[in-house]
Length: 104
Image (tube, rainbow, N blue to C red; front, side, top):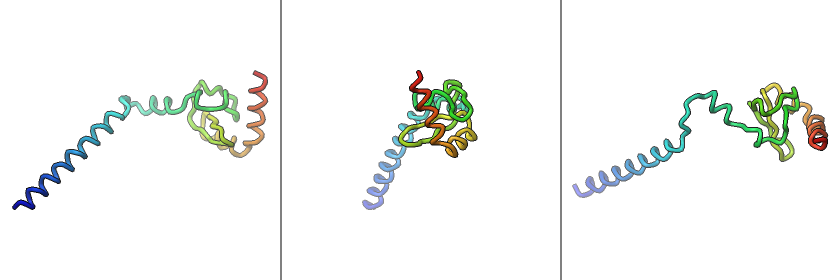
């Protein structure tokens, strides 16, 4: 009987500890449930090296839907297709970005 009581107390202690983890995890979850708003806030212009999408020329301030890491820098893109175009011609596009950054 004493072993059962100890096991019950241990089970209760573990259950309480797991409950605390759940609460702290929930507290860290963003309050918004709007997936479009969460997606928009995922990338900001400050997070990327480029000022405009190197593939289509759209300013990154209009929205970044995808990113790519290339030679220790993060580049932002308006769409997956623009990212794929960049990856296919990365050296040329990076050279263009560097030229534009020097002109500013």
